Amino acid sequence: MRDSLRRVLAGAALALGAHTALPATALAAPDEQFVPLATYRVGPYASSGIPWWAGTIDYLRYVNEVEGGINGVKIAWQECETEWSTDRIVECYERFKNGRDGAPVAFFLTHSTPASYALMEKGAADKIPLIDPAGGRTESTDGSVFPYAFPLLLTYYGQASVGINYIAQREGGFDKLKGKKIATVYHDSPYGRETQAAIELLAQKYGFENIQIPVAHPGNEQSVQWRQVRQLQPDWVFLRTWGVSTPVAIKTAARFGFPVERIIGDVWAGSEADVIPAGAAAKGYQALAPFPGGDGFEIHKRLREQILDKGKSDLKDPSYFGKVYYNIGLVNAAIVVEALHAGQAKFGNRPLNGEEGRWAFEHLKVDAARLKQIGFDGLLQPLQVSCADHEGGGAARVQQWDGEKWVLVSDWVQADRDTLRPLIEAKSAAYAKEKSITPRDCATAN
Image (cartoon, rainbow, N blue to C red):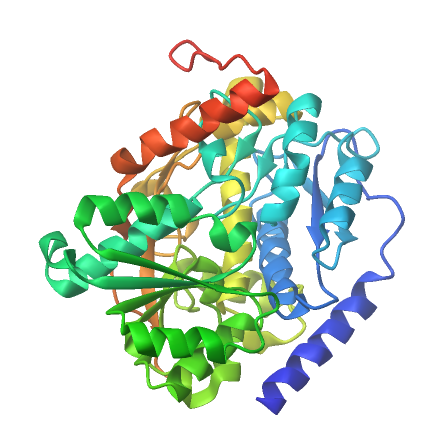
């Protein structure tokens, strides 16, 4: 654990040293697509931010240097350090929303559910799409009310449903869920509470007992919660934690005798940073993975040959290559690049602005053939986004920690989107009423 922590701290120092020398203005030109990056390479979440942003930048650099840009349009990016502070992410948005040096902004990657909430009205007013894969405000998947918010890949409701569907697979069918006890141990924050309505709905549908156990921030002491788990004896635990609260949960569960093989972490509780600090207690732990770990996908081969081996990687510690957070960066970068491809097909091979970016994301389609072409087969699920559906995927794989690495133990598990949709529409309708928004007619939207 000490060696792992030492590498994280060293990586943070290297990242800070490498990026404080950036020019005050982006090296952008009017014929380039400007991409602002609200990064967090220092601060309490640096251990996830350092590989995350390295993956994003490595892929953008690959597109520029190997593919010649997006149909010849080069990508220019500039970082803005936020330490994952909502206020600082909002500041970065304000700084960059009008582009740089004539190069326009087509979208803004929030990479933060609190920031997605804070920027919701600003993004709509400024006509800048807010992109937050596997995060954001769940009901913003309804693009009729939220035209400029995209919680792509897998909403929090979708994560809850995928978790329940995987448990059903393990139990031998949905009928076997009746009478089971499923406990959600969650970070007591808007993020952690986001799945409660969905799980309650699924509990009513399948007949399992829904147990909700909050963990106060930051979650570095959980004896009370896991003593409660031991007393209630649930069949499964869905772990919705973040940061230090995840390894603490895994270690405390072991101390109270709850089998780790019966714990399933959500998307943000399934990285190396979540299991390595837990040591031997984490072996057998499972987590949802719309961004699986591993460096054996085709895109990793291409990046190793064209970027890493040529000394062009943003990754200062090569051991992070292919880790979960690095792969999150790759997937997010690939999604926005594919959206820009879709936008250029309509507006021409040139940089896009925010309104055009909204159209691009609402017409994003990445099928199995395209995934193989770009080297993301197995790493990214097929996506098809529309005005009505700003999620576009709705699935995750499940990976299990074998003590040294993540191993995929399932194919893509799809969320029950038909069951969840009325709940989403009710919440989006309430938001529209509160904000006096007239929903778009997605049947006629362009």
